[in-house]
Image (cartoon, rainbow, N blue to C red; front, side, top):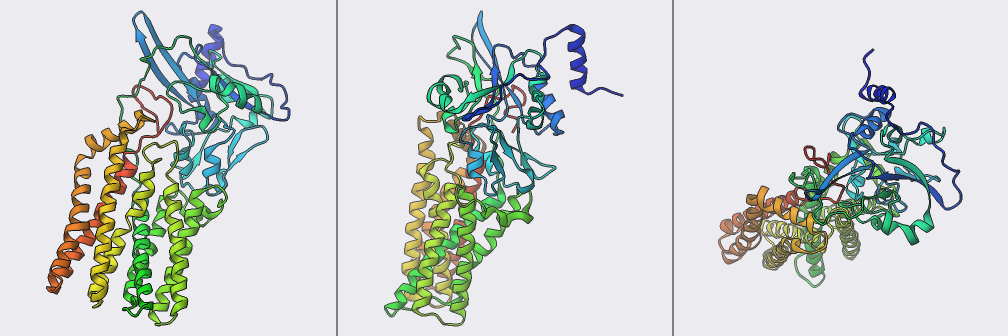
Length: 519
């Protein structure tokens, strides 16, 4: 029977007497306030990647799903040249971002400190893969869920070391016990940080590193030459833009109803219907992003700590209440009670879009973690205002047309400014490496998209609506120009959101010269 690569290497070590990791471990029982952790000794690692192979074989993972990865760095000048490696799996953090952000509470911090992923409840939303600053959780394409290292907990329970520890021929990986309080107060800053890894304080990582002395200042990642666009997340592109348009349109509807109290024309059923449709179409599209869309409803489970759960609940309620509002307009009933319902609905919708923007305000993805994300998510609502203005024109609501178009144009100008600031602030000093790579993607890979974004928002959001007001008496010309403005503005926001997802460069460990980050 043909041997696996790991079995062949184990036989080779036995024949040559090569030192290898131990099969059993001598770790004292945990006391109160303690947990297990990994220790990686960069002085010993030889880059053989046996730990990667052993981990995959132990957990029956395909080659593209790596729970443990080896990164490569180099620097210095001959003859004082340094090649340094980092073998990293889950850091079993004290404050894991994956656990706090998971909408289905699929992560559990076990009593022994292991951050365990419960596969059965995972919906494959992949939010944890964004949240983790170390890039540890990985989506399993075949199983349609996220998976990660669990420190071979079943082996630890039997007194055996994890597969990666066993397979390491140089003994570079070990299991240790750490006193959590002592680690946080005294040791974490000095012993938990590795070059090209995010600050351990972000999640209070527990992995201990032993590093060479006199690390050269010009140390660099071996994969810094590799720069690829991120996943475009097209279902989320449409979902986020459509729900934001719906909120903008609903606020225009609310303002119209407010003016009705003072004797002006009240918005009609058609306006309410066109405000409802973007949310009704957009919200279900988010399920296409999930590995297991049939369990989408469980995304509301973790309201306590997950912005994704809060978004799902708030926008779900918002859409339902907008539908009620549509019915009230259709039956021409409600009066002041309808207006009160609209005020409540608008408040819930505003919170829903705020929660939606906060999903992306995560330290692990610097280009997302900026105030411009919040501003642009709300800014997209100008398209909804222009849409309501178009329906008002088609319905003969001339008194509402000019104020709504003016408000929509003002929103477009604000969105233009937010978009400019979003690019300008990529030159910030914090996380400069990731932000500059995002800027490179924007202006090297997606130059035409960036140009289109700025031209289209000016033409679609400002010039065409202005043209429709100037020629308001020429009905057909006014209607067509505003319709083109709405459509062009919509496409502009889709392009901007596509760039938002495609050009993000996350934090993470150094990758390999040929394979990059393996993510």
